[in-house]
Amino acid sequence: MKSLFTAIVALCVMLISAQTLTAQDYRDMLGQRVNTITTAVPFLMIAPDARAGAMGDAGVSSSPDINSMHWNPAKYAFMDQDFGVALNYTPWLRSLVPDINLSYLTGYRRLDDLQTIAFSMKYFTLGDINYTNQLGESLGTFRPNEFSLDAAYIRQLGQHLSGAVAARFIYSDLTQGQDAAGMETQAGIAYAADVAVYYQRPLEWDTPTQFAAGVNISNMGNKITYTDEVNADFIPINLRFGPSLTFELDDYNTLSFMVDFNKLLVPTPPVYERDENGQVMFDDDGDPIIAEGRDPNRSVVAGMLGSFSDAPGGFNEELQEFTISAGAEYWYDEQFAIRAGYFHEHENKGNRKYFTVGLGLKYNVFGLDFSYVIPVAQRSPLENVLRFSLSFDFDALRAQQ
Image 1: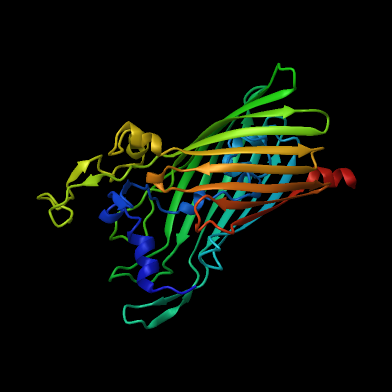
Image 2 (image 1 turned 90 degrees about the horizontal axis):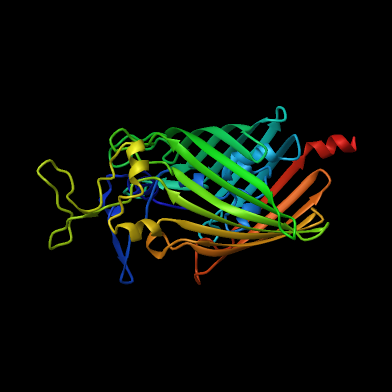
């Protein structure tokens, strides 16, 4: 993978900045006004495991599994096993570059009937990049990367309800310490927390049915910056919620349906005043003049609370900022699974639309899952995206021994 130094640094450091006007204004694409919300460290929002990845990236209310940390850590309270570990791997955007990938290690341990702890590590690498200066002279080959470390405490609050809190350390080294436009750059560091709840209970229907619902507010943390001379950027603070239904068709067959709704709790880019030449206009203090919307340079709390009412297009645009994930899962004898799903994002907010499919296998100690993304668009960077997950059930191992 080869790129100019200005491309990797300017794109990673400046174009996502809250002060970069071109990233904060509407774009006219094919006659349609687009106002995509951008944040730093977007790798935190990538679905890391194959099970949820096969169900349209839905997982906040699906049945508990080892990879629940990303979707809703409160689900760990209802795990049947006491201890488990999973390793996940995703070759990312393979239709564009060959060496970007995401790795995810997670696990949990039950302390007693009410308490559980969990951990995870997510590592994202952009592959080998040849940095060059403006004269085309090589500055060396580097491997920009980002990672996060998580720990969670989960407690069962009742027969049907559980809650969780998680802490997260985020490290993003995109520039490898190189200078950009005369500015010194550095690795970005942030700290964040999650708060989640999960509810499940059986329904009195003719077919044994389990209803579940979950809410997870994730990545609530400080802004991140790669240089002291550019304003810090929001990390992807996200609200995820949704229900699910699981039908036990008979002793061997189970069918589940679920829906997730997501909304970024960060400021929406405003519309700026422009002159007859299309240039952004500034006031006497040197600040850009906002025509519609609100100033995005706000505190984290103000950004979260204002994210429901700051879109330039009003309530209709606020609704456009919700993404929808819908999934289905079929299990036979708790050993073989078939999954499918669909992910929808509005055209004005990124236009990601894709179907997903996948399979799951369980054999004694081991579980193996994989998923595949099928973009709706004829050509998409998400083409050929595969996810692989390998899980270990240590309770089953002890039972065998």
